[in-house]
Amino acid sequence: MEEKNLADLQTLVSLCKRRGFIYQSSEIYGGLNSCWDYGPLGAQFKMNVKQAWWKAMTRRPDVVGLDAAILMHPTVWKASGHVDGFSDPLVDCLDCKNRFREDTAEKNKESKTICPKCGSLNLTEPRNFNLMFETNMGAVKDESSVVYLRPETAQGIFVNFLNVQTSMRKKIPFGIAQIGKSFRNEITPGNFTFRTREFEQMEMQYFIKPGTDEESFEKWKSIRWDFYKNIGLRLDKLRYKEHGLGEIAHYAKAAFDVEYEFPIGWQELEGIHNRTNFDLTQHQEFSNKKLEYFDEAAKEKYLPYVIETAVGCDRLCLALLCDSYREEVTTLDNGKVDTRVVLKLQPQFAPNKVAILPLSKKAPLQELAGQVFETLIKDLEVEYDEAGSIGKRYRRQDEIGTPFCITIDFDSLEDKAVTIRHRDTMKQERIPLEKIEMYVKQQLESF
Ligand code: ATP
Image (cartoon, rainbow, N blue to C red; front, side, top):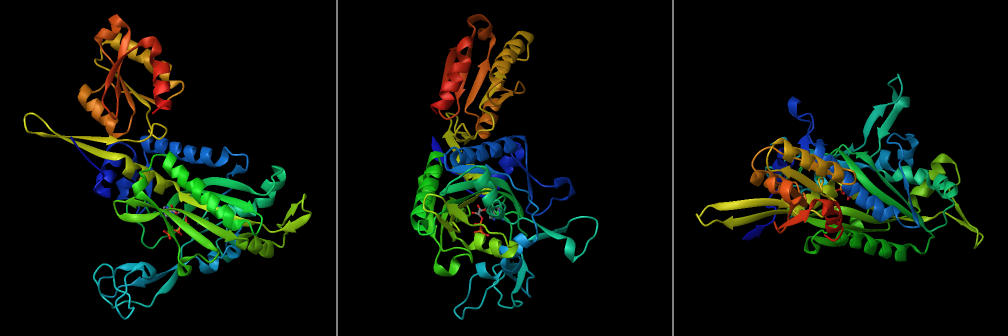
């Protein structure tokens, strides 16, 4: 048997559509570019990913959660620098009409930008294109009613810093974690859910005493690395990349990306930034409200520094799907080639933990299978599937990453036992009915 990894994104796109993970948004209208809808399995999978991050970040004494609104006071985005600075240099190719970001395109020996599509140097001057989506609040549409769809979740955390600190009686150092939608009118979205215009972020801002930032930055780098290790991403597909001086965002003193090797190459998964006290300083100035922290023990006041960890939820979902995808290719005795596609997701991420597969639709089997389903569904995501051949049903569950299949056959009526099939090894075990729940739960824990 030969094991193959995911060769290209297109293979995953079609699996995701075929199996109910991810569909093109508004598909019946021809689709909306760069927007994607998570289907039933995708929605559960994404929820599992968020839960893993949320648990890792907030089940600590020093980090609390937040869920701030998407729409914020427009001055927030002036203070943060997004109104003036959150833009990409946009260039049009006069020959092939391709529109692209100048900063990401290759240059020739004379440092002239080359069109990535046709290689032409015949381009428009770059013009700055603000990535924020604008809308209007209230009945009147004019300049005074402009609000923005947030381009990052971080600002909701900064403006609530003192609310959270005082209401939760937090002492520095402490962090605020948040999961939520962000919107960026990206010039070059694409590569499935890798870069979209509407996406979900999982961000944490850790407020610290100035001077302790470098040490805290190192601490979070290692905590976040361990997170990726623990969720099972292959270590040879993960690396850290430090931003050079020219690449660091306006707000940051140091920045590291956690990169993952997608089928499209090494790309950013998460950014870890030392944001200094840039954001709080700006908000203090623009709001005219003091945002200083009072350290009672030391009797001193200061504006905290901030270490940020920011990962795209959709991007992490994509990395997990790419990472867990396997094709097991076997040449059969008759010379034919059989390919088993398996998503080797950790059970915590699998949308179904168990599939219940009665071998026949006959009443006594259905009844018994129904009882097993009712027992397990109380605590676990369980799918009941009685349609089609058992081989095809196994293959479907393999493709969606279900760790265990429970087959109920005619013998089950006699010996009061079922067959449990393991996804990765395809090993089958006969387990008495009364032990199924305990067995499955133990297996899931020790996976
Ligand atoms: P890029 O330079 O690729 O545009 P960024 O460095 O601006 O991204 P951040 O602002 O640091 O990204 O956002 C944090 C995380 O949010 C990124 O690491 C990524 O996982 C995710 N993210 C950012 N933009 C998008 C997008 N358009 N689609 C999906 N995820 C995104």
